[in-house]
Length: 177
Image 1 (cartoon, helix red, strand yellow):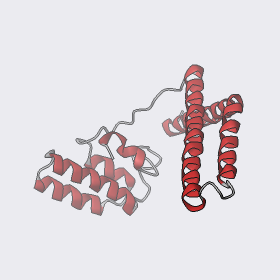
Image 2: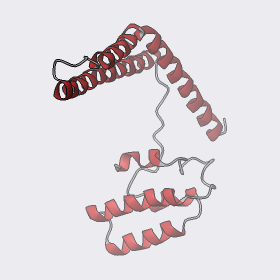
Image 3: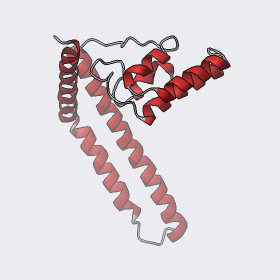
Image 4: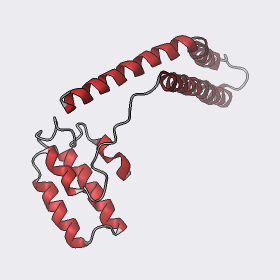
């Protein structure tokens, strides 16, 4: 975990006003302890500071008590990105499709190589070429991903738009506007 993504590791962001009064879980305290351990190892905290803050983390009851303990180690202010433009949403949807296509291609390659090697080692060239079934299934999956690209991109874009709308609405509610 890097210090830049500490707050993203929490199930509920302790910096958000709606979460500050919620009880902190052991896993929440463990995330802050890990950051303190890393800071101590890097020399950003001396032993006394580390011990004192670790004790305070153990005693923290609510999520709102945690950011204060690391405010000089990581940015506490939430960096809230603005809404994505339609072009950015489209670009991300296309990137997702490219990723899906790469995964399908690697699946075809890996499954085929493994199965054909097993077949050659166990049956030689005399046995029934059962790896054809695996190769065919993986090739059909790759074809499905390739030929439904436009539909997959449109679905991913709709999913991203819905997620963005939910985040914007949550931000408005959190800010009280």
